[in-house]
Length: 385
Image 1 (cartoon, rainbow, N blue to C red):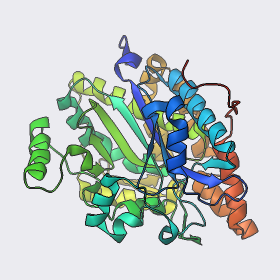
Image 2: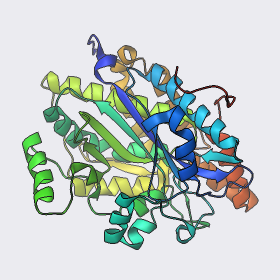
Image 3: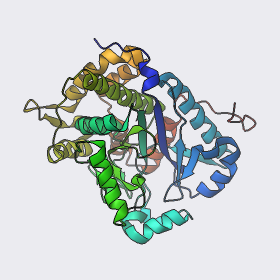
Image 4: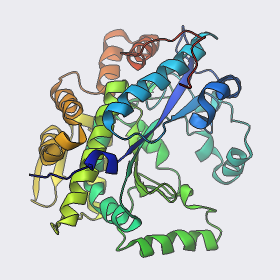
């Protein structure tokens, strides 16, 4: 039984959400990030940012002390942003890709950083019409961040499957539950990381890249999980942007619970197996392709099992920290999601398209799910309390 005072406050939470800016009636992408940044500055400050392509807005949280505050503040931010967009006939969509959009039709955000990246990446950069979720969990020091990254890689396929929400690309069903992952993997320094024996080894790797002109800072390491170079967190980066706020908070709760449990095990000298990257790639592919319908390999025990059963085992593993963290109800939500035959956002998009053959119907579905449980504020209300 894991008991540790102040556990929730130790493993604080940060959430970064990448939303699609769309026409409220059609659900089609709208390149309105620059007017939105100008309009939103008095309300959001540095909590909204652009991305490479103009139909994208990133909503960035402050540091949350626990999952309860994370839920209420994430809900509030999304509501305010949606209300502001609604004044101009726009809306948010929360999904890993836009079902009907083509990357060749999109405008690049006028920012020197993005133009510098495009000079290097060319069409690889221009085609990043994808939308993800990043979760930061605070850790005690840099050394434990590297140890945890090594261990946490085992469950990245499970986390990806839970978030899978990008079955479409350029107006077509791709046959994959997470096509966003395919698009992102084209970039250098992306995908699953190798293991590092210490923070010094990781830091040496980063500085080697900087000194040789490969990158100018550690934020250009875009792995599925990384020790954040500046924030003192482990950053989970593998997720599609899920359809609903409940999905986001459930996933954040699981990330926090995993970090807390593995930290406790390390502190008490209990070893957690570290699986080689080339083996984990097999499970990641299955999660990309099949989502919650995947079978994965438990390499420690040499067995195959459904990813649904494996996620239940994962939830069982972290259950004894859930009480102290206040995450039990959100983890229960994930259990229900795993058992729901309707599946994740990807499954529901596919099912609706097979029934209707209509991209417009998918857009309307995503518009509705994005705002599920989100109040709409009047324009007079300010963000700052």
